[in-house]
Image (tube, rainbow, N blue to C red; front, side):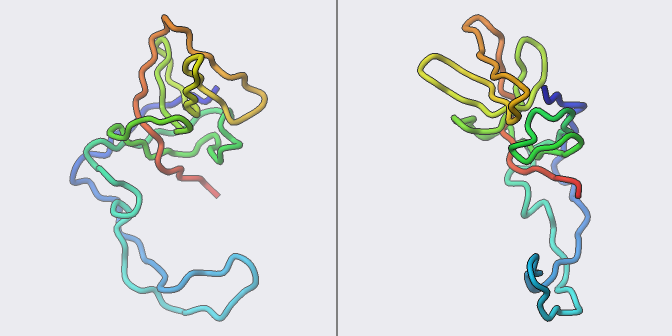
Length: 143
């Protein structure tokens, strides 16, 4: 089960460092003539975070979401202001335990679904205490 370790809140006004951005896309297939300069800097907050006041980053622990492209040690950008929908990857608190799963809303009820066949779906009982903390919007994956 993928468990969250220590959510870190991104405080309003806190900016990620500005990084250089290439003026052209870089080919991932065959090499192409490359530009040897960079075209200024970009603010990653502008590209990765829609609402800084309700966004935080969590580090993933475990492999239950690997087939969704979320690996152990990755960091997720999570927005608490977004409405969770069927199919959203969410940070959920189920009976006091944090987990990252895909939210499935069915006629029979709510299911927290792993993206790894080694982990069974969690069918949320009607009397369970379930809180959706937020919806994952980006995965920062280490290469």
